[in-house]
Image 1 (cartoon, rainbow, N blue to C red):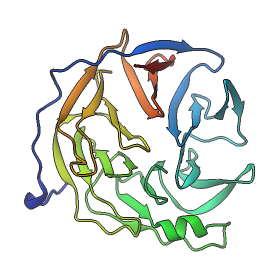
Image 2 (cartoon, rainbow, N blue to C red; image 1 turned 45 degrees about the vertical axis):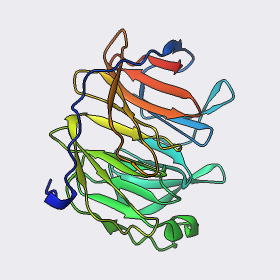
Image 3 (cartoon, one colour; image 1 turned 30 degrees about the vertical axis):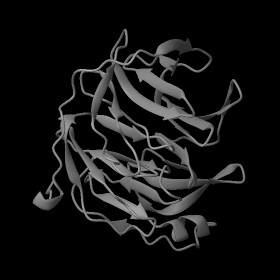
Image 4 (cartoon, rainbow, N blue to C red; image 1 turned 60 degrees about the horizontal axis):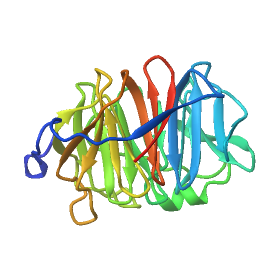
Length: 256
């Protein structure tokens, strides 16, 4: 990824502080591949690419097959194994224009995602909210750089590239931006909550949270390690509940 030197931010590497969470195994649905929480909702997919939604304490199967799902201010979206994009509308998945391998609905009513070539894209809030079906225009805006996974929240977007380098971007609802800023450390995936909290997992399966994230300092101040009893692969957070999936497919719900 090319990073403008004027935008380069250097912070403390992943280390140091530890945060203690109370984590309990979540039964019912096993072998989850990915999970996303936002605005009081939780969605997930399993290794068979079956999508689920958590309603109360019960997992309910959603229609279709998807490899990645997301929920947030922009609604519920997903992509399938062919990278086709879908929006969940009135109980059904409606095909949307374009191809992405991963999407995120956590921004200010806009959608972001990245394709197989690791090119990041943004769909403005006006286009996202105006989407009703295949006939609705979807003017995806290509963003700079190359990222394999990224997620947005109220203060900005975070991403990681194929070398697991970490980046931050201020992204407006109309997709205008000033490029990516580098953040020290390495993570294999990263998620931003709808309150701005940031969590990530590295290639070894270690779980981290970002300290000091505010509207005035959206890139935060450092990383805190969250000890787990086994290697993790995916994380999401919303309303005080931290959802974590182990590399072996066990799902944990953690609270402070």
